Length: 60
Image 1 (cartoon, rainbow, N blue to C red):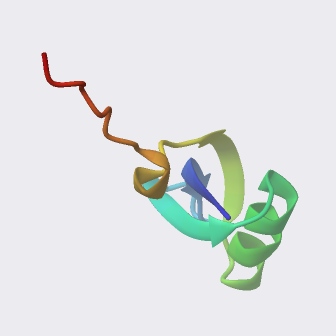
Image 2 (image 1 turned 180 degrees about the horizontal axis):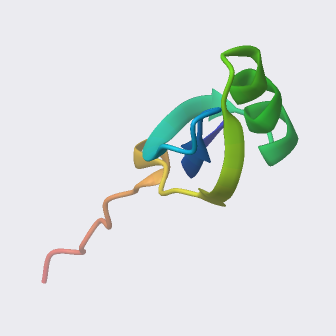
């Protein structure tokens, strides 16, 4: 599952931004925001903290 950073607006035109975790695609994000009465303006895939890996350094 991915993390998305998005900007949305409500019926009055107020914009806000946030992040949404565990969502598969932008289409699903748009669907979820529409259910709550918001319109998706912009979305991009954010950094997933679970994907970070530490590098193992060999001892000399």
